[in-house]
Length: 305
Image 1 (cartoon, rainbow, N blue to C red):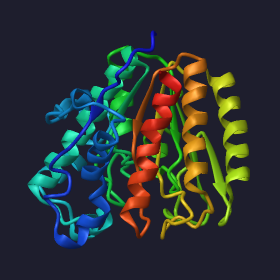
Image 2: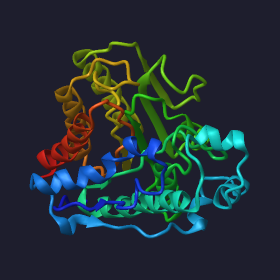
Image 3: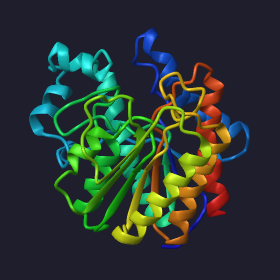
């Protein structure tokens, strides 16, 4: 793999629009991140791609047919719909399909470019037969299974650094030795019924930059040395920030960017392609969320240029 630039970025201009007003604030970042990156000159417009709808056959590599068909046809039970956190609409399902395709597209581009980004994604609470916590189709799990199905890679590591455990991802790959799931999250945070990843690191509330980065570095180097993945998925949630109303950790903006640098440097040193999905971020000030997410792109440029 040769590192080239510029890397591809999957963007979803309709992301916020299918939702009722009460759901739009958390999703606004997906429109603001590309605008901010372009405004600062961090990326150029030709790097952005707009994914189409994912082929259903690729969804069914990961999600059970009964679940997918009921989701597609808007026939989830009221309890299942509440669990997703969204009122289901056809446009919402199309959005989920485009996000999943965006992660496949940027996985393929990462094999050539070294790194690829989805401005959305990181829908790690979706299991093989359930949706939960604003996640209905597990984009990185779908893309990982796509790469494996196409024999493009044989061993995949999923680095989930969202503050919430990647329970859906853990459940999907629990019996698949080709995929190593690593989740570093708030131990006392959602989901309160956790699945078992290959490595779970539960952090205490108030964990600071120094402790966080020390644990991450030690854990990541051990996994990379022992598992030797050929491809990496990185879920770069910024709900680890001290400003996040749901996170309960004590990670600064700078600490969050150091986290990203650590991951990218580890991938770069071993020449392992990495696909990045943005994950969560719920700080009261949208500027804090957008800045932290944009810093992830800047960290990649710092490493790969």
